[in-house]
Structure formats: structure tokens, C-alpha cells
Length: 196
Image (cartoon, rainbow, N blue to C red; front, side, top):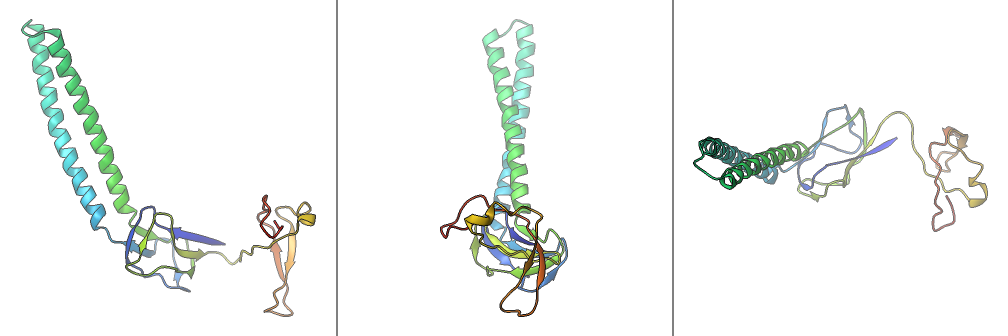
């Protein structure tokens, strides 16, 4: 079974200990992205949250003061409403800034790609300093003893094949050997060569 490994964010690969044929354990480092841009976003989000926090404190103080003045009949209801709206707006801005900081922290964490399980790296199609996009395969992890093979089946017999069916597989490159197999998926769309 092959599992493509990819980053959740895009960037430039700064570290790539992964090599074809290398055995990895769950949690081992496969690749790391350059984090400079993501660290800047994280620091900017921290600053924005601190600013929003200060704005909220000021808006709350203004609202509390205007409420007392309104109760003493020293300001109008519209002034009180205006300060209350400012307080609610500042509270919403702080919440938004906190979520932006969480997102920036998450993106920073996504710059590290670890093996999700034990296995062997069957393919590593990237290099250090290569720019990769989110979701682009950085390595192909083979786990377990099994091998997955995709086979084109003619339209005339596809209806007789089901998941779990047992099959025997032979390869011309390995004469005299027969391998036991089981069907794990059955395609539902015909390819350009009229096979499924």
C-alpha cells in the first residue's frame, strides 16, 4: 500500500533527510520547509492580537464610562449605543485576531512533514531548495508487506469482478512465480483504452 506524503502548505524545501529505499518509523522527519515567511506571519498575528487586545480594553473602558454617564443622565442614549457598538466591534476584532494567530501557528507547524506510520520510502520526487505547493507529493511511503497493482480490465468482464475476489498474478519479469492477490478497488469509469 502506497501513501503519498505532502505538506499542507506550500514553500521551499529546506531539509530533506528522506531518501529512496529508506526505512522510516512513525514520526520520523521526512522533509521540512523554510519557515521564514510563516514565522513572519505568526509574529505579525501576535502583534495584531496585542493591538486588538489594547483596543478592546480601551473600548470597554469607554463603554463602562459612558454607561455611568448615561445612568447619571449626562449623555444621550445614542452616545451610549455608539460606545457599546465600539466595544462589541473591538471584541469581534480581538476574536478575529486570535483566530488569525491560531491559523498562523498551525501553518508554521505544517512546515514539518513527518512519517505518519512505519514503512519504506519508495519514491522521493523532490530536492532541497525546490518550491512545492500544498498537496504536492514529496515522498511515497510504502507500508505493510503488500504491493498494490493497477490492472486494466476489459468492459466485457468488469461486471464479474468484485472487491475481495481472489486472483493469481504473474509477471513476465519473474517467470515461474505466481502471486496471490485480492481485489481492493473496482473502477467505475472507463479509460481512453476502453478498460476499467
